[in-house]
Length: 258
Image (cartoon, rainbow, N blue to C red):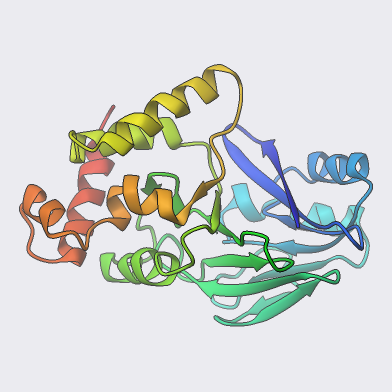
């Protein structure tokens, strides 16, 4: 399994997931279809699927165009999300096959949008899995609660995604990592792992390199939104429960100007 990031728009990422044995590929959130198709052509792979995380234009806005440019391509999206150009609606737990070795599991991760889907992808034995989290889980952050509640985000982040195998590589929808880590340090100023990762992320961005992927293990060490089960974090925020803490940290982030 090979994963290639395709930077697009201002700070978005689209991705190609490639089965190297059959040269079949899936495109995740191809917001600029021409860029994604050009990347696929350069790699010599055939696009057969589009995996849409949610209906916002900067994720689903290229779906109609990619259907024009790649006749017969299947476009997947959440059944509750009214995804533009969708040809195949997904429920939580649905599975797809890509090529010979890649399995894709649909995970309903609502809150940012009510039908948001994250895609958990496994390849050959011995390969680390990957998860494409759209705007639910960012590196060191999470999406705004546009269509849902703190209870839903807790379930999506801390239960559904937080319980994935720790080596799972995390591919999110935007390059927000530096700002997210700067904010995370205001929540946990003594967290050495956040300090280290922020220094690394700054050096990556100065070199023009992406900060993705992360891993679930790294997020459990550095992402305050997914760490809300920790009693010491709850106490530092002045909250009594994980959901209350998540709601308060999101409020703080919404008002934070960096």
